[in-house]
Image (tube, rainbow, N blue to C red; front, side, top):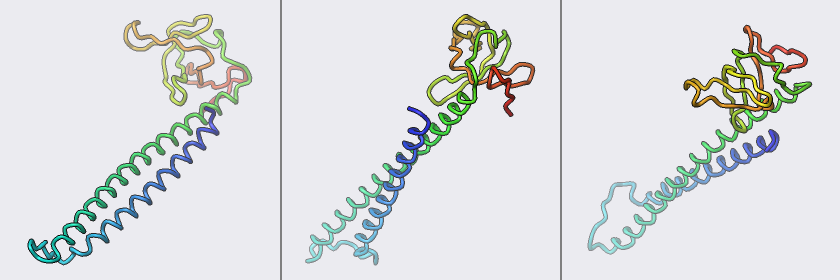
Length: 178
């Protein structure tokens, strides 16, 4: 999924979250109105002619209240999903922009042991590692576990390289990022 589609998905998720929040508020208002009959604090009078009607009204109001709570929970989940989708879209856009500014791909000659590299780990997340070994097709990175957890990443996943305090995002032009 490219950055533009990811951004549209985030907007759709936010729209859904807003819609569910409005629905939850509507349901809560309806439940509140249904409890209006009991606002004065009058208890249900067993044996009174209004008891069955009041009992039904209270049961309906309780059910409406439960539905409102469920709607609020669904709205909260949707808000969390929308927030995650927005963060993911922003990360994808940032990664896509970084890759788009390159005039050529990274090569083994661009790296030395000890360089600090930022690599794309998944679609929308990055990690920073120290280069442990420069291979023909991949970089072996220091995972910090004494060798057993050292990840290998292809050169196409590298977003930037830092050497001597200078960060390079475009291997050909030598752009310095701030």
